[in-house]
Length: 370
Ligand SMILES: [Zn+2]
Image (cartoon, rainbow, N blue to C red; front, side, top):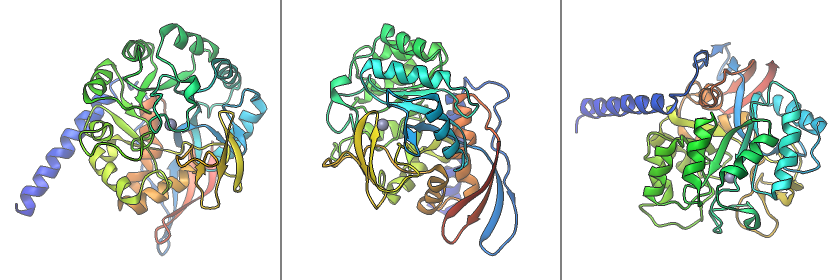
């Protein structure tokens, strides 16, 4: 095939991809902005840039604060908001994973009570997920359960209606009904921690699911080569996908291949950060369970092989994504700012003045203007 034909085919695919992304963002309200153009300074391989504030859809904790700790206080939430703000993140979703329901309710109430413009809502990840090892990741099997409208309403009431994103496994009993109901009430629904079949994924998408949570993770290390839960979501154009690009959750070639297949227009960078983020190696908690941050930046339950969140910062994730994919910074930044904001239906907030070192793939946040 000649280069022109290949280019034409590529353009056709990109055009079709754009239509899919627009369809997936159909609920986007007027006023949600597209990515702001980058304003660059000069320098040899280094540029000073003014970027839109970063948006992170998945933050379990930061700087020693665990949002899933039932003893969480508004003061602790604000400490984490301030620390995460220094990394350029001006909007994010505190994320609560599978836990005893009373713990969820306590944490949701505290987060809902904490008034700060950076808190764009709550991401409820679980407990309507797969109970199987591998798929459930670090989520405690004892508290995994089927999806239930009354249970979800109870949690949403405690959160004062601030649950904005719900991650479920399509195969969890009752999941499809809860997806339809959540979407109708304005909650975005993601697929994650799932061993769903192709038809179960299709049903979830038809019911209104629009995102894959940390695609390629929340999955056993060995799965059928094809079809499998990763390919089915990667190939579904009505699903955007979030990726944890810390170099531990996905290999560089996996990040490159997945973002190419999903297209940058449908890709979102998240950190899945836990209390250990921004802290030295040692023991921390994730949803009340003990986890360990190694000297190489890997977070796991002591003695277990699977990862349990990350110590990633979103500014570092941007640099890693440029390094792994070969995409220009200008195409990667929206994956961590405008795109997740559009997905939530909110504008990005504030500006990040940052220095970009192309040789080191390093984005250094100089100043954050709220
Ligand atoms: Zn997860």
